[in-house]
Image 1: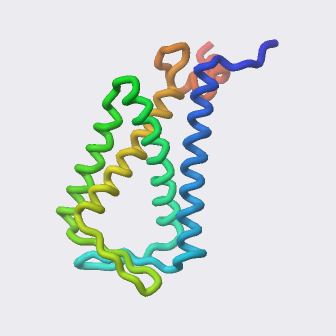
Image 2: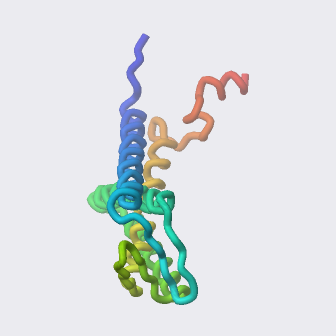
Length: 167
């Protein structure tokens, strides 16, 4: 019996592994920032302040890790002449501008230091979220293709069980 996987399936598995590693490293870095280095962090706006525990910082770290993978995919797509990654980044930046216009100035307070972030920083954070979304989109697109064709989710997740259920 031949247990080798097709090349496109191996590549999609490698992409899933890359995304998992990027998100995991980012999450660990965010959690480490919260517990070891800085301690308590608060997000302050004009009307309220919210304390950030380990969980939101781990999620933020995972988003940053995913954005690194997304940036890698944007660069690969640009070499192929595809501009959709730039569109996702721009959409994230526009969303960041909308958040900045709605919320106004934002500050982070940590370890006795307060840092204020203006519109440019929030727009940049939106672009990072856009890159993370694009990275996830590309890995899902690759995972959903077999033999160059788009496949059904059930065929990708458990092809043998899906085929038995339909017989």
